[in-house]
Image 1 (cartoon, rainbow, N blue to C red):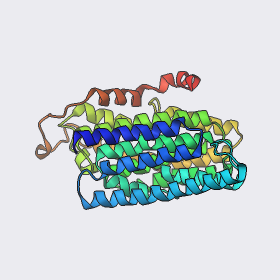
Image 2 (image 1 turned 90 degrees about the vertical axis):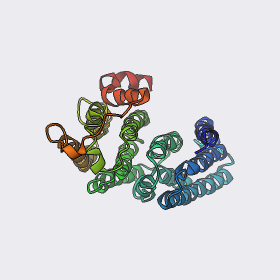
Image 3 (image 1 turned 180 degrees about the horizontal axis):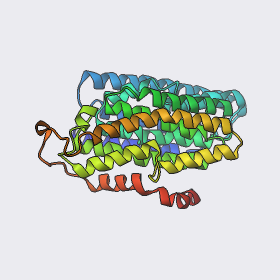
Length: 344
């Protein structure tokens, strides 16, 4: 892609998200979401492949449907209440706006577009779609969290955790694995949204950090399949080792970064006397733990002395400072979790 066009698209993404973050008005928030949607479509189709065109079409239709639902619900709410304020919602429209925002995020059962779209686009665009594109809808969801129906949040949160784990088990494509990982993590966030919005924000920030670190690592070794990642040790041993740790961090194993949000969410659910919900959530998360450990096991099998001679490559992989920074944050934030919570 032309560097000038790329800069314009990235600038449009930044403007769209910033506009949504700064708005107290549903119409301005909707305009920011639309700018975001239109700016990422050229990035999806920068490689003219049928899969990329299909992914961009699916993404556009899904996001357009969700945006239409947001606009219609906000208009009807303004007609009823006389105001466009984001935090002033009447009862029937709170649910429709929440469902539309969850559709934009890719929460189950409105998740069907996400794995297919991420599978059809480059890793760099998949990184933007999995992290930056979720900031604006999640911010709006946080602003209306006190008005959202608790049963809706619990149902969609548990469904997302189950589908995020179940869908990733038999995948051989790393981009689809990351898509189902995203669905599962968003389920944890939505589950606790009504009880503790600050904890949802904390979980969201750590999710962005860990997902970005994983995508940067995959971009460094140019791997999109499990079979490719299994032969990457000769190219970059240190990077593959840190990727194994990032996967364990995404799974939520201590003492890595991903353990802190899961621990705090379970403690918050126990504090709210929802022990059954906490137990079901922990059992459902075992599905996701299985496919993370499966990926880690595939990498371990290729460690020396198990490397076949035919898979040996020259070590030409160059790790950027950004990859190193995100990887460090994705692994070592756990001891600083109380400090970040105090700041939030």
